[in-house]
Length: 161
Image 1 (cartoon, rainbow, N blue to C red):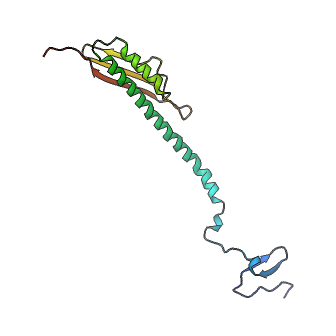
Image 2 (tube, one colour; image 1 turned 120 degrees about the horizontal axis):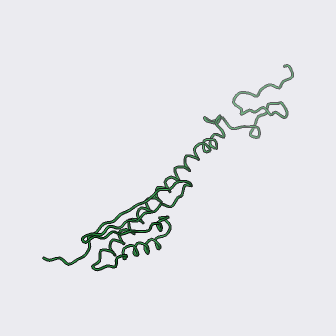
Image 3 (tube, helix red, strand yellow; image 1 turned 120 degrees about the vertical axis):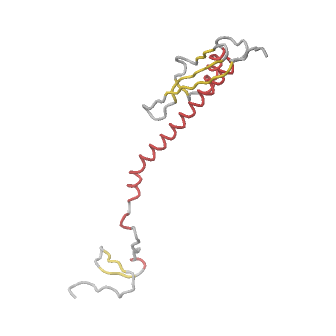
């Protein structure tokens, strides 16, 4: 038998113990059966390391898109409130711009850089147009989106029937 121990009978769970160089049987020496996919152990962290940058880029891009839409909404609401103030009968020449400035001061920092040149209103005899410009809040460094929203309305005035 050339000095080796014989293998146990078929049907027993067997493991060769490296320490002793012998075959043993029983529960203490059993090992788990190989399942399909056991050869790919440790693959999940590698897959996660490959996919995670793409997930983070999509996450930050979606937050940036949301910030742009909130900035557009803020600028449009400021322009509409400016038109509503400027179109009143015998409104002061700067009433619309003042109302838009007040609105933007209370709205938060979604619209950045609107102070220069500031909200502007153009009034004619029959209508008023107010514009608000700025940039959206930047979530992704180095990315800036310019925002310009305009609202239009008719001036209240006395007309003959």
